[in-house]
Length: 355
Image (cartoon, rainbow, N blue to C red; front, top):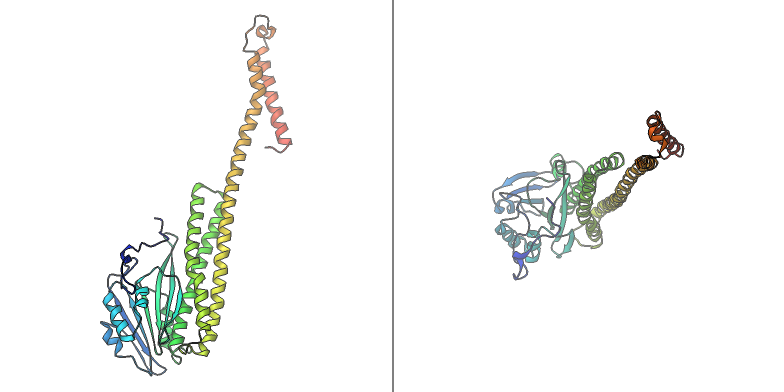
């Protein structure tokens, strides 16, 4: 089924700014709240029944990562907004899952919107899920549409004290989450690259009408991929330039690396778009060549039968004074002449390399 490029938002019509309405597909039956609270020496990881349990761990000496899976319970967002003094427009954007990646600075916290992508092997489609993050002095709040993400490697680094994540602050945690999302883009690009290679081989060997449909399918997927990756470049660049005290200078060095990876991902997406566009031209050219081959065969057959038809027409007139009509060897002679003409034409076409 064709994916809509624009989400319907009629439920928001007429409502004042900051009205909390979930816009998008409901992808989770139940909301799950997970907490990871850590510093260099301690770690607490658990799934909590309510936000009050998570709020109890907020402390200046630790970093708290509160993750929400499922966005349909508006009351939870209202509770988070009241606890962290989050602007209603931010909460409204969290519930609107059709935002492009962006960064907004609210002094006391940073609000980030990113797109987490997955490749469906069965349908060959790229699925996008919005991830919203709020970065505060000692906490990171992340909001996902459903369970399942690309952050498990980050969780493992926290559990096993790998790298500097347990020694750094909330800004480094936010960087690690952004880096995990960008790294996942490369896995998507590798899978798309494999599909494009298969498509290119099919296009050269045996293109069909279904081949053109596959090309247009991946062109649409590239539109979705570009919408997710291209604005992320601006987000990371702005995150380096903002000069906010929420992001330490040491973390900015790592953000530059993510920025470079994002640029490379954007270039790869643009390359894929160019390849797919050229594939359409190649398909049309291949179909035209195939039609030319068919027309050439039909033309050769028609050319062979033109003199044969002339001979048959002459001897089909049945005039009385046609001497060949009563000749004993007339019939086989005419056959011999027609076969010689057909063979001569075939030899001529072969010599001209038309066959």
